[in-house]
Structures are given as C-alpha cells and as structure tokens.
Length: 263
Image (cartoon, rainbow, N blue to C red; front, top):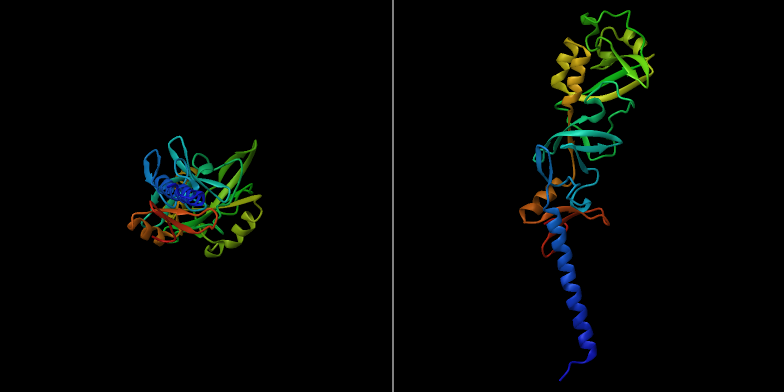
C-alpha cells in the first residue's frame, strides 16, 4: 500500500533539510580547522582569518595577508608587518610597513588603535614622536644631558622636498630644556606618533642617530588584543572550531553537529 502523497512530501522535506543543516555545520567546522601559513609564521588560527581561513572563522579586524612570505595586518589604515603572535598571552608584535625601510615615508600617518580590538602593551611599549619639516635646533647641543630624549637631527626627502626631522622619546614636560624644545618642535610642519619597544629607548637617547631610529622602528612594538579568547578556549577544549557569526556578530563555536554560542 502506497503512503499518502502528503506523507511523502513531508518526509522528503525532512530528509532534504536535515542533511543540508548537518553539511553546513560540517563545512564551517572544516573551514575553520584550516590554519594560516606565511613564511616562518605557521599554524595561525583564531582570531586571525584570511588566505584559506574565511572571515567567519576569525574576529573583525584580524585579517592577515601574506606578502612575500611576510604576514601583514592593516589597522586603522596603517599596514603592519606581523613579527610575532602569542595566542596564549594575546600579544601581537608588529612593525609599521612604511617605516621598515625608511624613516621618511611618502605619507605621514599616526599609529592609532582607538575603537579596535587592539591596545598598546604598556609593559613593553613607549610612544615615539617624529617631527618633520623643522627648523634646525641651533639653540640646543644634542650631546647635552639637558636635552635627553631628543635626537640629533635627521634629514628626509619627501615628495622631492628636503626637510629636517627630529624624534622625541618622552613628554616635553619631562625635559629640563622644554621651552626650547617646545618652540622648535612646535614650528615643525608635521608630527607622527609611532610606538617602539621600551628596550630600544636607551639607545635612541644615548646614541641618537637615524640608523638607531630605523632599527627601533623595524623591531616594532607589542599590542594586546581582546577577541572572545576565553570563549574560544572553551570551544576548542570541547572539540569545536572558533568563529564569528557574520549576521549576529556573536562568537560561534562550530561543531560537526551544529553551531553553539560557547562550546
């Protein structure tokens, strides 16, 4: 005896929906098990995404690109070379791409991390101020302890224009020669703030030349991040893959049998 048509229709619908749902979750779990490999940096997972990892497998703002075997990340319009990733401590060491080969880039852009998942690691990072288009510091002897924190001058050619620059490793108010520095650096055409590792500051202050400045900038600085990391650990401990729902903007744990808010 043949079953009624309505029964066949319902059964067909159930069978068509169940495997599709399971397949979708299997696909998400499989996609997010992929890792990013770029040069010496291998097995990069959540919260980073890019290359073989879809956006739903990471966290907003953590897209990585691979350029000549160098991982790169763009934050607030500035592109950084990724030097080290410590997922257990949520630490990211980066260096500004436009300053890795020259202290005189074509475009002058501050490093800013407002309204992003990143913040300076203040335990290891200090701000460095670069000033461009300045007058010569004729009133200050750079080898004097009274001007500690300000470098000897460096020269740049930006957009076919030769300009004089200086850098400052501390707040002007901390120096005993702050009036001269304020008057001189206040007349500079441009200023840029870029963090450096605090371990580089002694060399920047004691030696104070463009080579030391280039080296400090190429070593970069550290950022801390926050991207639902504790939830991801619970997800991975339960055998799932961490991700981010692009519709709800919520953390998602992808498993073979479905998606869950935590594990």
